[in-house]
Image (cartoon, rainbow, N blue to C red):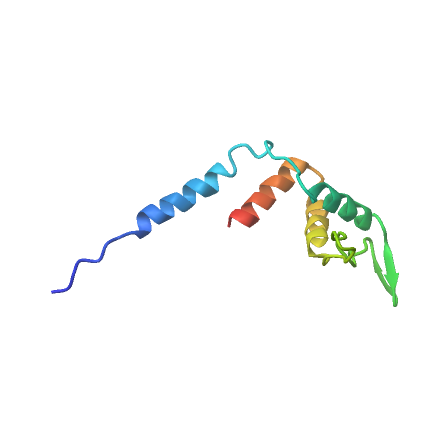
Length: 106
């Protein structure tokens, strides 16, 4: 004779679906703010520089450092690597925004 369990999964899943779908309604209505334009520029430059080290040839160079911080130290290269992968898939900014939205909303 226990208490009847409440089903709260339905409203939570509906809320998650609404948030997920609204992020994809207007994919072209996004701006590149803060450091995103610089990250995209560094990724574009790195993708156009071939690499030949120790007999290994790559058509691109993985970024070795990220953007400089306010104190002169450099951040890690992971954000530039993400944009390098995006640019390897497509050069269309709207497609990049949709993929980024799917990744970060998921």
